[in-house]
Length: 251
Image (cartoon, rainbow, N blue to C red; front, side, top):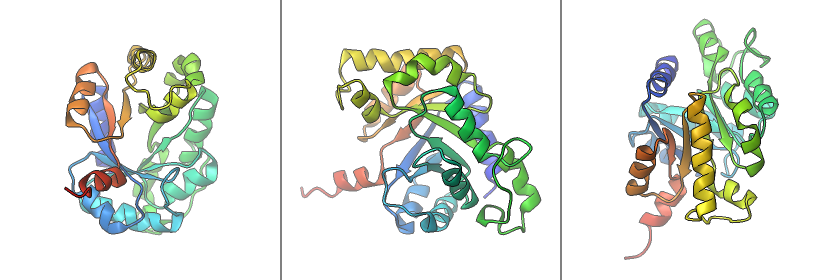
């Protein structure tokens, strides 16, 4: 898979006012990843924060996603340099970073994801460059992997303008459960306060020309269409485990 081509395609869509819809994996099995990779999404994020997925399983999960021409991303457990390096060296084309609350935090993650001269990530042979066979070609991707910041805490909103100004930020993704929990209204997504908060985040992002979206955890095509019409442009649609839970209920 030509990951650079796919990254450029997603960036081009977002920069010209289009939208990008992806999904999420928590189940550590390559067959599940292969199914999700063939489902038609732009990208699928492998969840290293809440999923039961180990670093040693990443190469097979990413390979399975790539079979369906779906860009593999990693939702990091945290933004520390080790997490960044291991996910990207395993073949992730970019990262979704949880709990971003200020610009300095995001800059540190960005630099940990990039090879020099753009950043500080360690350079070496890995699955990402087929253990050196495509070292030169991979260097282009390693200068600027896809970078998505998750806004998951009310305290981030006061720093949102500075977050949006971080060079290399591709999109914001609102984590509805953590954001609502930080507001002491956990999962009250129909609360007027919550609705106004996510709209405020989107408007600030729009002012800075940063695509903004959210994770629609419970699958609903009506909600997906509604959020697109409201101007949210980078959306994660449900999770493999939730798809299975809903489809598996005895009729």
